[in-house]
Length: 226
Image (cartoon, rainbow, N blue to C red; front, side, top):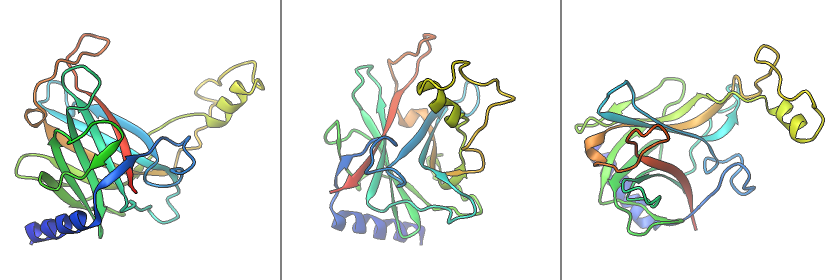
């Protein structure tokens, strides 16, 4: 049954057409308040020395828990771009797009074109998961990939109001100490996509971070169907 649902989803994606244009961050008015609005992106090892990598994408920040849990826009394709040869151009992408209460994932695979445009990789399904609401649902594929899509507590701590005072020249004392700072993001949700994937599916990388450690250089884009 699960395979059938995935095939139905793939056929829907094919019919809809799949050329999409990249969106921007919260400073882009056309994306604010939608699931094309990228809040935060995290990439890390789940445990030290793990042979897996976790990618966590937070979209549409500042969703209040007492309102609807938030929704994923079916016209928005989220792409995790992965650079493996240190040229800051994506060599692989992992994609996620929702349909009828499910989140479908594709890749990792080399995109047909790099840059702002994106095409859904319907020939390279990675897996699917029901979009969570109050209860978190995680699916693990036969390849050892774990998938989640749904609301999560916003992990971002930021004294937004004091920041505005500082940059506006109204707070010569600067930022407040932790015990006095406020966090307006506390108690709000984001719509999150989380993927834990074996590094073997990502291949080797020549990238290094500031500490000289080998890493995948990675970033996120959202793309809205045009």
